[in-house]
Image 1: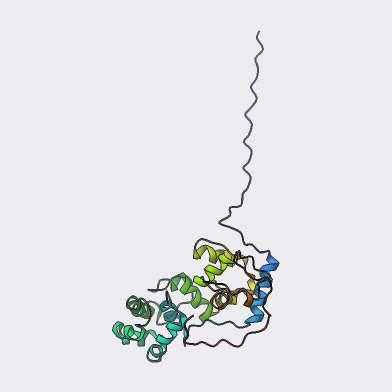
Image 2: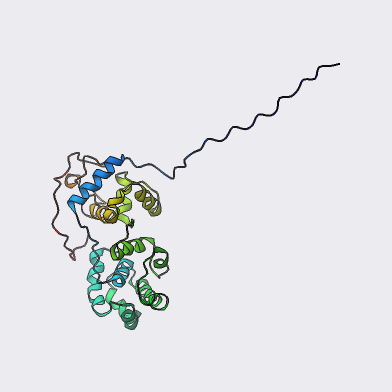
Length: 257
């Protein structure tokens, strides 16, 4: 009788190793360094403010919607007279698209923006009882209101901690490698992960103002930077931080940024 060689039972497949998917480059900073960056910003500007003039949540929505591809100073110059006569959705709707155009014609894309201002005013009245909604999901249903605008309104009007990624924040997050990302949404998600929670309410204003006045688009003024020693930007020209002192209260001017 021949010996029959028994086949070994098939080996169970090894369980796949758990992997953590990375959505993009990591921040170049340790947690303690990020904490120190925002601590210095908080000393420099304890109560940072947005520079768009407004008198209530409605005028803020309109101002932020108008600020796309325009400077805050340019928007302020156009809206001062507009908001003096139309500071509610009802008054804006009564004003009409043509007259809104006349007020904002110094702003880029003013024709389409005037159309959106009237449309969002109408939607606020018909869908929200004339009140500005307090959720991002509802805000982005308004004509001319995207995620960034909604985040600004939630933060400035309702005190919700959000990260409104504009061109300044997108540039800063990538330039200093704080929260690299290929799109504003990626940068927003990254900043929300790395920013200490107790600094989140003011974080987007600190970053905007830092990008507007110090870490400028054409040439960063590193000699005026309070985080020059911590900064990991390849473009950095100075390692000595500027004196950490509280800045004078913000003055909103008509000068272009």
